[in-house]
Length: 334
Image 1 (cartoon, helix red, strand yellow):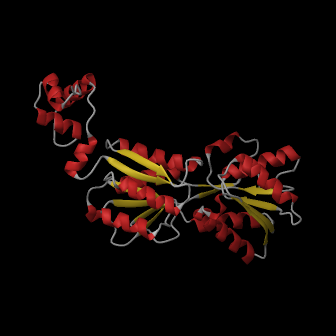
Image 2 (spheres, rainbow, N blue to C red):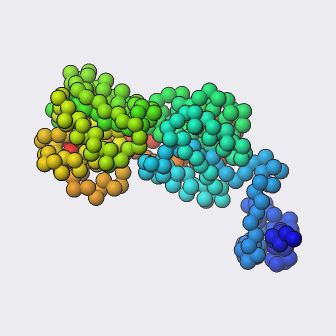
Image 3 (cartoon, rainbow, N blue to C red):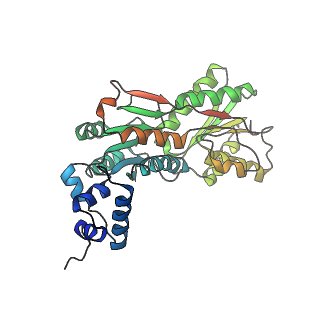
């Protein structure tokens, strides 16, 4: 026997009609604060959980926003998700997310799966996607926002920063300090396309100024402080030793700092370092890292606000790039 409470049970408990219960629980129509409180109290008391799947089949939509994250191994994306979640919570919407691990093929499979739940919108990491991914999104008719990058062609609206310009700005800063021989350390074996764009901007600026990229080390696997320590040691053990190292993110750069401290290498006199993202944990390091601070929370908030809208008339007539900017933070490492 099915003992799960129904809307009828809630109506009887709260002393209202079943239609009123439906309106309150779905957040549609109007109800006085007293009636809303009685319905919500009755629902909690009875342990009522709505059947979202049935609602989705009836209305062809759900209170869900789909989010495809590049990874959970980098706290950058958890901060973007925090921005998405706090924005959706105010409208009683929920994010449902998956992880691609920087694989466009995995993103394609994930997007198809997420769209099968009929979300109200979808948020993607970056601007590069397979044609099948783009076709699935177009066919679904849902709103789509892309975050983190502006260097490319958005599907609809992109919220983020120019990764290429972030690399250029870092290069200009390091060049202004007199460094001319540079190394680079990155992860994901080139699958992190946004890091590739930063490196391209950095490399071009260095060469235009007469500097050299003497060594570049991009390894397979996730970024971490341990990987940063190992990568730094590898570059410094090479015959062509750099004066300064640009890291694809702060995790790797923090590992570089730890290697220098453990090895007695003076920063920045013997080796200059710079990272990317401006993560909060850097404040706990004994040396302040030079890095670029990115607006992770704001990207999540703005993307969520965009995709949760019902009015498709507010969609841009042409793909839009919303530049949320970035900030170079000059530390003690260069």
